[in-house]
Image 1: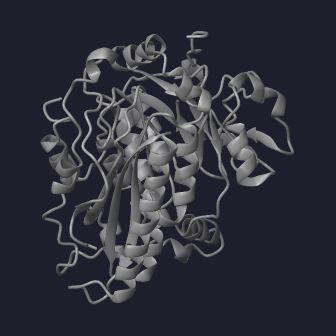
Image 2: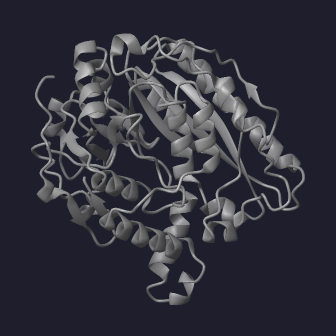
Length: 431
């Protein structure tokens, strides 16, 4: 490595912030089909890079088979608001998968999730990432009566399939990232639940299930990884150091995040092409700075951005031993924070990646975030808004989770269907 990643001191592991209430502890149903995908022999589970290419092959058909018994239009299976309040697992259905034929020499899979309207963000990630990229693409569908999908829902599904196919064709032609995509839909009985209950952590876990490299980096689709990071991982000796540190020493490597304050998406795209050594000269109050400095400063002020000893709760970690996301966190709020906190309490050592960083690519605010903040802010003058709200439920889950972490008894709640599927996949089974 160019220089040894700086280990973050334990004294900086607890940051409490008001405003955004950040507590960062360092830290449909159409017939199943593989759409122009291909089975490839991908890196296996060995910690050696050379031997990892000869391990169990990742097969998209095996992944889709996990959803064959899903019947999300059956009575009582459509997601409702009450399901969220009772922490009932979502009934998710996967209808299509896309599996790249391109080879990869990078032992890290970028893992993400997105709604159908964020497909351009996924393409931007693919443009600057040279390795495998696994993503779940989510489509909420309304069927108040159940039994069958209405024509407009079927049309939305077909349009999304077409958009994903175009992205996949682009990626294969450009020979950049190697996409593994899973289109997941969820049937709702009402519009309110469909808008607010985005199953973010379930989608993160399903996306991770597509990875078969020794390492993963689970980031949001609006964050662009620096091109220099994946270029450095093409060096087998360099990459092996990370594989060993993450798998044997319980290290995770934080990817510091920045945002553009002016210039929009194209400016962010350009920043991702730069080396980390160059971006310090760009930091300033007008165009480029630490992520969410002006929106939620106490969430990130543990990071000395001028010295680039940066902290942000997205990181590269061992695929097998890193923690799963708690699926009780839906919509907006606390979903990543809980995962980072649990990772800290589980004894992982946090380090800053010396080369990699992330750049936020601007986008419109999600409906889930709008609804969450509407209740959070509105309840200050109208407490009745809290009753039966997602905000109150998430806050309750987080408080209980943090208490259990401190007591050493916390276990993330994971979708039983996903766990069952993992046992059947050759690149996960028996590990």
